[in-house]
Every structure is written in C-alpha cells, then in structure tokens.
Amino acid sequence: MTTSPGQYDLLIRAGRLFCSATKRDGPGEIALQNGRIVAVDQRVAGSACQTLSFPDAVVVPGMLDLHAHPANRGSVFGIAPDEHMLAHGVTSVLSQGDVGADHCREYLEHTINCSETRVLLALNLSRVGETKTTGCFENLRDADTDRCIRAINSYRHAIWGLAVNVSHVACGTTDPREVLERGLHVATACEIPILFGMRRAKDWALQEQLESLRPGDVVTYCYRRQPHCIVRQGRVLPEIQAARDRGILFDLGHGAASFDFDVAQTAIANGFTPDTISTDLQRRHLDMSPRHTLPRTMAKLRAAGMEESDIFSAVSETPARVLRVFPHTGCLKPGTNADLAILKWSDLPEELEDAIGNTRVAHTWSAIATIRNGRIVRPRSRDEALDSK
Image 1 (cartoon, rainbow, N blue to C red):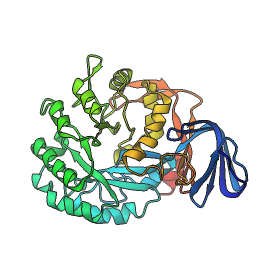
Image 2: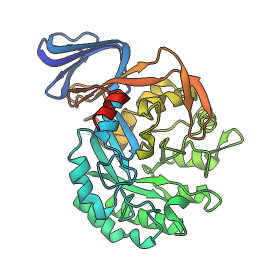
Image 3: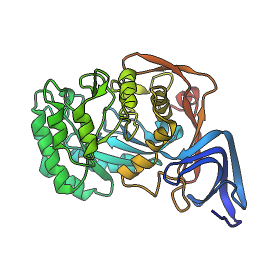
Image 4: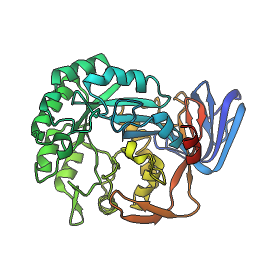
C-alpha cells in the first residue's frame, strides 16, 4: 500500500501488527487522525504530533469481550467498563443480560451513553434482568415476551441480541424448556440472535437444547466441566460438533466457574476452539490478584494449546463480525475507528489458574496501552486504582 505524506495526530510503531481481516502480521506503523486509522504500512510516510514506539509488543485491533457485565449501576454483577476493562485492551464489550425490559432505558442512560468503552447489550429475556440476587427466571412471569419485544423495538440501536440462560441457577424450579421457547419467540420476532447458557444434561439433553437454536446463536460457557461439559473420554461430544456444523457459535465465558484447563486442552486438541474468547468479568473478580482480564484469559487458552493467531482473531475480527460492528472496529484498516490494543508478552512464565484451581505455568499477555477513538489509555496500578476511590 502506498501512503502520502501528511500530518497525523499519532503515529504508532510496533515490532508486530496483527490483523486477521487484512492478513497483516509483521512489523509496521499505524497513523491516526481525528479518531480514525488513516494509514497502515510497514513504513508510513509523513509526520505526527506524537509518536509511540512498541518494538517488543504486538498491536491488535481494539479487543471485543463478547460476554461480560459492564454496568455502572443496577446490575448485581456490574462493573464500570471504563475503569475495569478499557485499559486492559477492551474497547468494546457485550453485556450478558445485566438488564431486562424494566431497566433498559436506565442502562442506556447510565452505562451505554456514559462510557468511553463501546457497550452493546444482550437484553435479558427476564424483565428484571440481573438486578436481583435470585435467579432471573425463578418467576416465569418475568419472562414477559411482549414487554421484551417492545423494549427491543424501542432501543434496537443498542441491543445486539437476547440473553437466555436456562441453567438451574437462573431458573430455579421453572421449566427451562418454557424459558427457551419464550426466548426463541422473542428472538425470531425481532430477528436477533440469542446468547445462550445451557442447562445441565441430566435435566435436559444437550442435543435437544442445541437443536432448538438457530445458526448465528451463541452458546457461552463452552469450556466448563460442571454442570455440563462438551467433552467425554477425550472427544468432543457429537451433538456439540453437530451444532457447530450447522452454524451455532461457541463463546468461552470464563467467569468464576466456566473454564477448565483439561476440557480446554481436550477440545482444542480435537480442533474445537472457541469462536470468541470472553471473560464474563463481573464484580466478584475485582479483588482478584492478579487481575482477571481478557489478555490473561487469552494466555490461558495459549497454555491450553490454542494457536496465537486464532486467539487474536477470537478477540478482534470474529466478535466484531458477530456483534455486527465490523469493519468499524475489529481490524487495522484505513477509515476504521482508531481502536487498538498494545499487548506485551511476559518475560517470565507465571502460574495461571482455571476456575476450579488447576494450574499451568506459562507466559502471559498484558495490555500496556489501549487506543480508543484515537485516545491513549494506559492501565493503572492497583495502588493507583485504590487511591482514586
């Protein structure tokens, strides 16, 4: 690509630029102007008001976390996305059911419209969402399809899809089949995808659950061991593979209980990698040391055998396409939003832990800077974060 000399706001030089959408992987430079990428090349001609050099880091498109709990208020799981996600390379995040129809307007006002991080919503089928400590479908009346459809039609610009979690925790004694049936009614009527949390197989066969889903729907918590598991005796379950073959997508959703190293290694060895990698970051993670971040979650998948290029794609191009924000973000291409993550690979290995205490010793990624709409955001130390409170 040929570039013309010009005056840029910011020029970034890196030892490696990675973009699966443009097949770029190697040293290069990116020029930013007015919040957009205006040039990408091995050497960009022209001058800049500010130049940053990262010779030992990789620059990837601003990362997208497909399953987390961004909420400045209201959600019992909510965390402030600008404070806890943006500086760790995440420029876009999808809320997994933090609110339902009853609190949708407030969520837009206090979280989506007030955050520098791009926040999208998988609206909870439950009208109360995750605003209570009890399961959101324990009262079946809360799965109010008419109210849900009205909310989606009113706030469609901010709503990507519908969150339907039929786990025993979410449903209590409510029939999960009825919950999913109502979710499918809403999603079909509004022509939106479902972000689906499965039921344990002893209550409802996984094959029956998955056969109800449609191509483009996303199953989250794909590498957990309990209460459901996608592998058995060293192989991916045939019903899981069949669902993928007909267009169902699979998301990681690490969270507090949904990542198991052995399950991940088995699935990856069988060629079953997650389409998207997400943290399920929520309030209970905030006191963890080291921090639970998307780069650290990516490192766990690398330790489990997933290829680096597939990992980068699963936090950039693929979730951007799934969330329908590509190519505005999710790629390093002139004309797109200046959303970038600068990642550093650790010098020394450290102990990585899954959700049940199993460990692997491996190197990790961390974000040393984030660019959101052309603005530089750097991570703060834990002491700085505490001092600001």
